[in-house]
Every structure is written in structure tokens, then in C-alpha cells.
Image 1: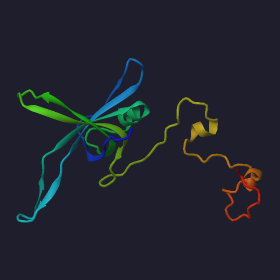
Image 2: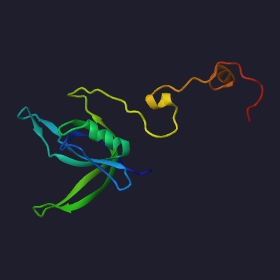
Image 3: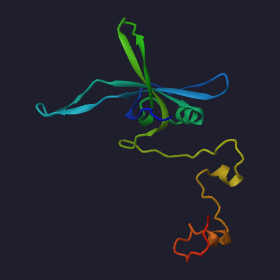
Image 4: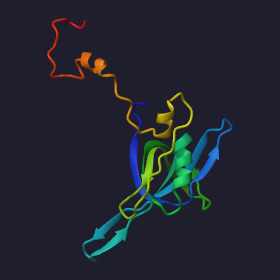
Length: 166
């Protein structure tokens, strides 16, 4: 939707992702991400940690299942998503607080201090041909040569006909 605030958060997962299903069978995963800024103190010549920002992140459907299967507590992640309005609550100590919430669009491990192996999942459902179901990133079959020869956009260097297309 237009006007939504999109943010990127880099941090560590605080707990193992929690996977649940709605009554309609839609998967939803929740994960808390902690992001702590570090700055260099020029006077002491040492790194200092700032205040940790906690962000509750939510993923839906197939993404939720992938998050629950792939990520664990302590994993460093990069999360991009839509920022939701903060929800206010009262802590056990009686202190008023607000939580940041992000609806995840993309999430993955940070490769700054680690490596990762990607395993592609086959798409489920739909009427895709068998070849597309096995590899969703496979190239689509090439168009017949005759169709390409008649396509002026596919052959920009080809001489144009005098017939106006419209």
C-alpha cells in the first residue's frame, strides 16, 4: 500500500522463531530481533554499546514456514518490512512502554560474520508446468523464432516496415 513506512533492521534473533497457524490454516511466524548500535569512543579508544532496540517481526504464509525452518536464536539477520504502529503496554514493573512491530517482506541471514547455504523450495499449488514446479527460478521456454522475427521490440536493429502499428 502507498504511504507505508518500510524499514530495514539488522540484528540478532532473541528467541527461536515461533510458528503458529491461524484457524484458516495460514502460517504465521513471530520472531524478536535485537539491534544494538556500537560507537567508537574516541577518548577511551574503545567500542561502546548503545541501548538495544527490540523489534517484534511477523512473517506470513510460506515465508513464515521458511523462517521457522531456517533461523534460530542468536542468528544475525537482515529484515526488511513494513513498520506497524507501535502498541503501548505496561511492563511488569509498572513502566509504560511501546513495542516496535514489523511485518516482514524479506528476511535472511547476515553474511558479515557467517556463511549460509540456500536451498530453494518448490512452489506449492497453482497450475505451473512440472518443470517450473521443480525450479521456480528456471528460465521460461524461449519463444518460437517466427514470433521473435515479427516482434519489433525484440529486434530493435531490424528495419521497420512502413505499416503503422496503430
